Amino acid sequence: MILNEETIRLILGLKIRSSRADKGISLTELAQQTGVSVSYLNEIEKGKKHPKPSKIALIADALDVPYDQLVSLEIDKKLLAVARLLSSEVMKELPLEHFGIDTSTLVDVFATAPAKFGAFVNTLIEIARSRDISVEQFYFDALRSYQEMRENYFGDLEQLASGFIEDKNIDCSSDNLLKQLEKILLTDYSIVVKYTLQQHESFKQLRSLYDFNNKELLINADLSIEQKAFVLAKEIGFQLLNIENRSYTSAWVKAESFDAVLNNFRTSYFAGALLVSCDQLIEDMEGFFAQRKWSAERLNAIMRQYMATPEVFMYRLTSILPKFFGLNQLFFLKFDLDKSETEVHLSKELHLSGLHNPHASFMNEHYCNRWISIWLLNDLENAPEEQWISGIQRSSYVDSTNEYLLFSVARRSQNQKSTVSIGLLINATLAQKVKFLNDETIPRRLVNITCERCRLSDCEVRGAEPKIYLQQQQQEQLMIAIQEYLTK
Image 1 (cartoon, rainbow, N blue to C red):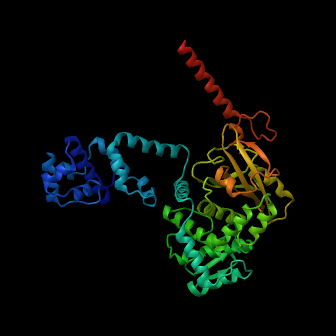
Image 2: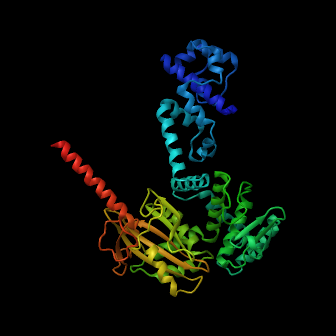
Image 3: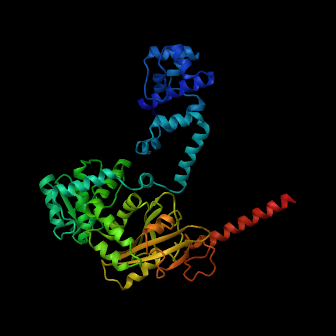
């Protein structure tokens, strides 16, 4: 076990705290006996300070513990699990500081019940291994939790984007937007934009690649104008925020750290805020929600005002609706269906104010075909490429009191179909804000999470048998029979 300087401080603090607790001595009493202030002793126990040998000697005498025992790297069995955790790769991968947690706080919790907490941490590690959860997946899951904690609204990036638009006099609805962004990258950051990435056989699946050696941003020419605008805006975000720990490709090849994943998100957020103005979006959605009738045409018209893809537009709503409309009980989903596949998969999700249904937590199961997110994909067959279609649904969940108003936009490109959806929990706030909520033309459906877990026997679009539901029923019946037998 390799112990760095920080870990040695933490272990010393734990030893002192453990010995003090064993002797029933308070921090105040220890301070009186040693002449060391309570605040400094507290810093020592939390691993933030490493005292001089003379002070360690005073503490050892007061606790009636040998000096060598406190400073030795040998650790008793009770604290061994703590030391292993602190020196493990797991601690290096945990982005604690971004969640307002420092290592000493974690150690403080750990020291209270080291055996139980150690077992808990080891259990989480084993679950991750058994589910084949990679470090990269852990980073992305941590990022999603980070966003959800802040209701996916980041005021500093909103202000940065609006200030940048004003400073550079950018017209984001102009057909000349690409030229404006290209010029800013060239004049402000000496970055040359080239639409030649598709000429490299190895990079055809990428949208962009930043060549930092030659200061060239290579973009796939086959992208739509909205996708190109996003790539340019995102690169401006990297430069404006002076970010070095970053990905140089549009799609992750390998996520090296949580900071890199977070930086990628922040620049994407900046790009979305630049292309879809917060103030304009609030005004547009207020007018849209004020309608008495649902209109897909009106929603499409609003989206076309912005130089942004439907995905960027819908994702922007997850930031604006909670902050400015009070609609924070929502989820965002993106489903993809590649031409080479027959089953859809959930590629992106975000849940604000709790884990809503549906969500991606089931391996090799069939998502409910009653969701508009799924069946809207079938309607894309008659739609032109690079065009989108919109739809709406009121979804009630089997064995749940929750009902959601679900907006979906489906799009077909060369290689895949996809839908992006926002689900808003139907409650008093939504009823007040969205005047077309009770429009009778909005389809209502009873839905579930996956076919394998659904008890509905008359579903006309079932994609698989309810094997998991049946297994659960058998288990419950067995438990009832056991309980009845023991009661008698």
